[in-house]
Image (cartoon, rainbow, N blue to C red):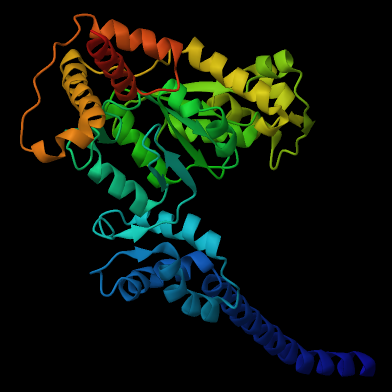
Length: 413
């Protein structure tokens, strides 16, 4: 009995202490959990970036009055983001993900923002040698300046005539897109762009929004196809997919014709291209769904889950032969303008040739008009035949050759 009394007394005292202790532990746990949750929230780079993004843009753009590069906005935001999260901020993550996501989510708020994204590739016209980087500014300037051809008449001081163009009109009839930057020297060596009157745009992997705006505007306005060359892998099909449909980064305004030139499985088998192991990140079923959505067949999907083939697997001669076969298959032809344009340039070419031959003796006759020559009735056919025999020529240079031959005939007579 005495022992029971002692035990009861001890329990009576300790019970209160245990209750108090558990209450304190619960309180400490709650405070700790609350602190942890608050700490985790503060460490989210995206949340902090979204909070400071507008001020960062205003700082980088001089209060919204000037264009600002994406990296400038990143530098304006980076200090606050890193200080509040304790984590380093990667420039690619900010420029390619955080900033575009913010501009999409707050589209009305950022509609007037003038953000310049870096060029991730190049666009090159045939014949004119005009090339520009596929960044915001390059695309904006090109679309703003492109227009109809300008016919520059011959003058004694110049003793030549020419047609000046910027844009597709009278110059190129298709755009060839390739997901790699390193093939331009090969294309230039074989005059690929000139022989087929195509513009060539190359990118470093996935196309950026500036590239998609360019093809959206050009292909729709001039009824041109976009011909796509890509690696045979998951990334290659994703690149193809982003050129065919709207994404969170860019919503197409027009329907354009996108032609998949490959590589496809049949091309690999035909040219016996070497494959390499592929490593699919994430879940296989998701990869299958993505490949299927972007146009891969079931047979190709099975191959792509384990293997991949790059455009670099082609030998240079095989690559050119393969591309030329694809261009022929899809009806890519030389550009020949309307009859009125042909006739106007013919007259100028004849005049230019005459001035070249008579430059010395006619230097004092600059103001005199040159007699208008007769235009061949079959001018269009002559241009077509000459381009067939010499596909590296542009149509206006073909007319110059025809005019030169006409002057030779006249001199001989």
